[in-house]
Amino acid sequence: MAYPIQNYMDTIASNKRFMQTLTTLFVLLSVFIALKAVNEIKNNKYIGAGITPGNTITVSGTGEVSAVPDIATETVTIQSEGKTQKEAQEPVSVKEGKVLAFLKSVGVADKDIKTESNSVYPKYTAGPQIECFRYPCPPVNQVISGYTATETISIKIRNVDDTGKIVQGLSEIGVELSGPNFSIDDEDGLKAEARQKAIADAKVKAASLEKDLGISLGRIVSFNEDGGGYPVYYGKAMMSADSVGSAAPAPTLPTGENKITSNVSITYEIK
Image (cartoon, rainbow, N blue to C red):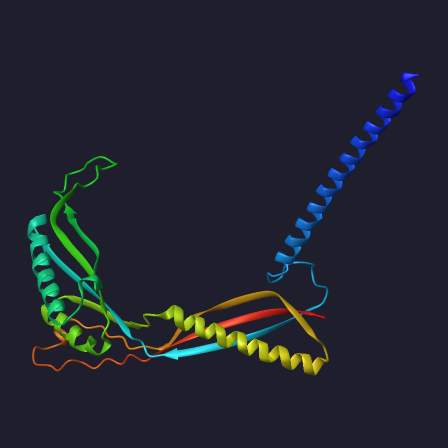
């Protein structure tokens, strides 16, 4: 008589374990579905994410910002020759000292003066010619006849109104000059402004297309920008020591105007 009761109890225990297992699987499945739904919601926040759109339309926009350059860059090259490295380097060091003293006197900060290169290299000439009666003749020996020392310094002039005066002063020292090149210090800010104008232009075109084509545009599925700074005109001077006399007035150098352009394209989903 004990066996039927035992079988009944075993059946109840087995059913209980089965229900517990089923409940656990149901909970895990519910958690999985909930997490997947949350991820889908997050993904749909990003441009172009989610279900691939069937019909789309792309509009383009252009934005431009113009600004007067507020910074100038001048490059100074000092060069000298000598029979030894010391003889070649000493005049360069002397002129470098004069350049740095002059720049300090006109208010150029140390952080805006940068040595781009400094080198001393030998000059070679052909050695004595050796008589040769049999081919091939031995190569002619090259001998060092002297040295050339060169130093290049870049200067950032933050007060562009002083550019002409600084160029004149450097020329009187007797150095080679290249520049000045005028640019905009905060170009990133102008690029952002140009981009905003380009996006606004594209949105106006999109609204016009909605009306003209009788369609309704939905979310943005892609965005692309292709743009940068393009100088319309800038002043540039190439001057040497012979071109500026000690009594000559400081030259007036036109800075011109720089233009930053941004071109964007926006792709919308058609509802």
